[in-house]
Amino acid sequence: MKTFATIVVSAALGFVTVFQCVPRREPERIPPTWFELPGLPVSVDGQPTRTWEEVNQALRRATSDHMHSVEFVENLKAKTPETSGPRVRITYVPAGRSAGPGRTTVEEVTVRPFFPVAVPWSRAHQTDLVRYEVERPDIAQ
Amino acid sequence: MTRNPAKHPAIPSRRHWGLLGAAFAVLVAASVLLIAQTAQYFSFDFRFAFFLERPFLTTDRVWAACFYMHVAGGILCLATAPLLLWNGLARGHQGLHRALGRIHAVAALGWVGPTGLYLAPFAKGGAAGQLGFLLLGLWFVATSGLGIVAIRRRDLRAHVAWMVRSYALILSALSFRILHRVLHELGVAATTNYVASTWASLVLAIVSGEVLGRRLASTWREPALVPAAIP
Image (cartoon, rainbow over all chains, first blue to last red; front, side):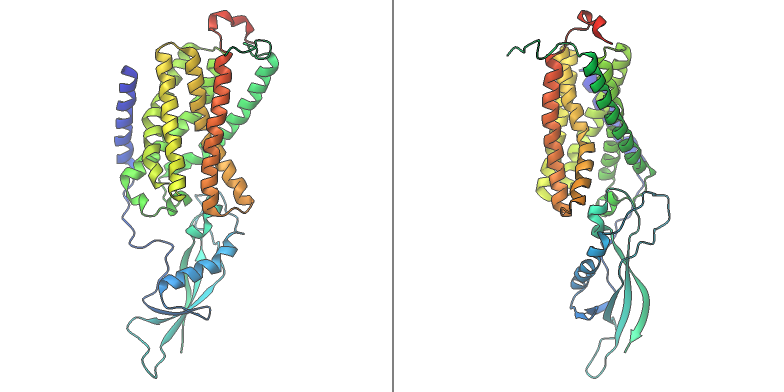
C-alpha cells in the first residue's frame, strides 16, 4: 500500500512539475505543411488546379520522390538546413484582382520546398515535414 | 511441469554468464544511445520531427506534459532496468537493488505507464497503431505492477519473471526504432511501416519477455543456496 501510495504521489508531483515547465505554445491557425496564397489558384507547373487543396496535393506529389533521397543530419542546434526540393511554379489570381472578361491578371510564383529542421528517425515521414515558401515572385501577364 | 535439471541447469555456468554479459553489453550500449537521443527532447524545442508531425497536439499542455513525463520515465527505466537485472541475477548489493528498484517502480508505474496509456490514442498509424500502443501500455503496467506485488510478498521467482517481462517491454522502444529503420530502408510505406514496427516490436517484447522470464524464474534458486556458484 505504501509503495503504491509513493508511486501515485510521485506521479502527481511529477505531472504538476512537468506541466509547469512545458512552454506554452499558441495554436497554429493552419497546418504548417499547408501552402496557400491570397487568391485563387490557376495552375501548378502548367497543370490546371481549382483549389488550394489541389495545389497542396500537387506540391506533395512533386516533392515526395525527391524527399525520399534526402539525408537528414543529426544536429538540432544547427540553423535551418538548406535542404530544398525541386522548385514548383504556381500561377494564381491574386485576391482583389479577379480576372474578368478580357483581362488576365495572373501572377506566377516559384515555390521552394524545404525542411525546417533535421532529426534522425524521421526519414519515413519526410513529406509530413516539408514546408513551402515563395522563392521569387514575378508577375506574368 | 518439472524441468530436467541436466537440460536446464539451475545455476548459470561461466559460459552462460559470458553470453549474458555480452548480451547485456550490447543492450546497455543500445540503451545509452537511445537515452542520449531521447534526452534531446528536454531542450523543449518543438522542431523535432515527432512534434512537427503533430502541430496541434504540441499546443496541448496536458499532452506535452504527459509526453515529457513519458520520456523522462522511459530514460529512468532504460537506465535502471539493466542494472537491476544484472544486480539481481548476480545477487549483488541488495541495498542498491532496493534503491534502484524504488526509482524504477516510480518511473515505470507512476510516469511511463499512465502517460503511455494517455498518449496511446494520439499515436500515429490509425486505430491499429493506437491499439498497439494501448496494449503495450496495459501489459507494461500489468507486468511492472505484478513484479512489485511479487517482491512485496517475497516471491522472488515471480518477481524475476514479471520484471523480465516488464524489461522486455521497455526494450520495445529500442526494437521499434530498429525495425522502423530497417523497414524504411526496405522501402515499406511510412504508415504501414509505423504500424508494422509497432506490432512487431510489441509481439517480440511479449514473446521474448515470456520465454526469458519463465526461463530465469524456473532456474532461480534462493540466494543462500548458491553463493559459491557466482563467478
